[in-house]
Length: 185
Length: 180
Image 1 (cartoon, helix red, strand yellow):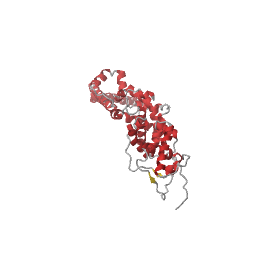
Image 2: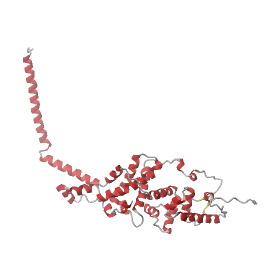
Image 3: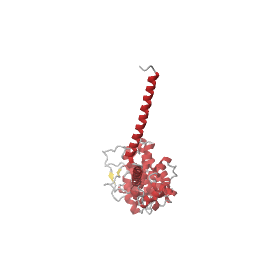
Image 4: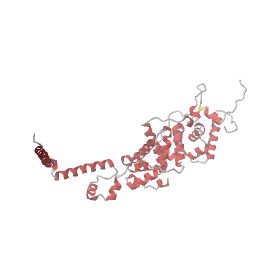
């Protein structure tokens, strides 16, 4: 992905063929990986993957490179931005074709559970937890992800995730007057 | 009044007992904002609405993890066909630069019809130019009418020669036989 960061964006958006070719060569592995990962749940064949990837490149150069011209290098790295764009394109491509399916084993248990309507869930008051605390708790408990994965996503170390998680639970327990079990859950 | 002491719930049980879905629908996250957040370039304040949106959407949560995973690893090369197809999306400039265009190409370039990557427009103009050149050359060469007339004359001559040959053969055959 270092090659992507060396692409001359001005030449690219002017439509210079050599720059476009270099850009395609540098970006194709990333776009290929993102499209394949995004389309995993759709269980598509190789032709669909190729078509979805081509859609990404079409979107990038369409209307005189309009989308590429919106990219701001001061806000995010080109590989990161391209990966987000590729994912959006892949989803749009498949929405035009079919609905997604997902093997039941890949779905976290929390999503499959049937809500006991006899038990009313307590609402978390607004402002009790920060957005990051909620996000971390959702990843750890709703998505059942491990601390290392969440740390990599948020570009922090694992100890920061554990610390944020601990503080969030302390707030929740204090608010709802829940005793700490002592073993960290 | 119960004096039984409740068993403390685990962190997971406590979280699952709470309605964590926020009220209202968080604002949509732009591709640029999501990319900036993934790169860790946002301040805590700027990141908060994006994290709220990601927290509220399980699809987006999983997507964020997937993208972070992909961006952090060495990736295999893409299929060659993918690269070839994508490169073909911008195809005219290199051909024009490589050949210099020739006199005709330079003339067309002078019309500034090929500024910018609009392959459909360029191909359309080239097609029209080809028709104009072909038509002009055809008319200079005498046109369709003359050509047809010439062909007609040639065909008539050929046909006449063929008929004469058959007639001659039949006559010969007649006289070669007993003439009845």
